[in-house]
Length: 226
Ligand SMILES: N[C@@H](CCC(=O)N[C@@H](CS)C(=O)NCC(=O)O)C(=O)O
Image 1 (cartoon, rainbow, N blue to C red):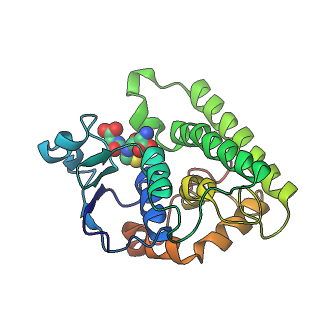
Image 2 (cartoon, rainbow, N blue to C red; image 1 turned 135 degrees about the vertical axis):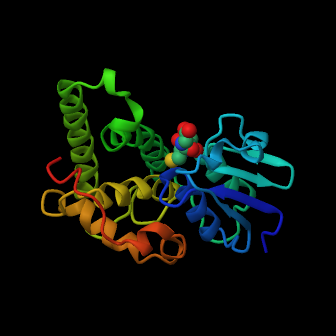
């Protein structure tokens, strides 16, 4: 069905997972996939650099069209396949506004999450300070409480931008799954935990669940006190 599409991806990478969920939601199964290894540095290979000079994944191609930013790829898929599969951007003004708002707040969420989870990778040894890590952890707590509050306000069983699944969920859910994978306490964040449980069962999410998480279901406890 989507034989003219190719996705190069890492297992467990939130940006890659976004594109995979969008492809599933738009009924674009059957695209060419290339699973690469971060540990082996395969994202810096010439094959990737030819598509994405930043040497990052996802790297996505539709025919000769290249999209390497996960947000750009997901927006493109929604626009090009608007009437196919799930409608991901609501038409109504209020719902559409909330969808865009949460989608782009997801960028901030991703950054705050990465500052803690990838602290050692992002900051070389000489640049690490306990006080900086503490600040990053506090910033992540504040961020997570915001999202907990958003879901609380919308009520049980809702998605991030209301009662319908939207592009906000496609883009932000992988980060929410990630924080639980890294030990976030369901007791401290009950709404986020409920949302995570709801989305985990969604066919597009199940079909694209990170392979390495299936192989080793046990995550880490880095965020247990956040
Ligand atoms: N803004 C990009 C970020 C992509 C990104 O950071 N990918 C990571 C994997 S999660 C990567 O390839 N990192 C390797 C590197 O930066 O060298 C997007 O949303 O697609």
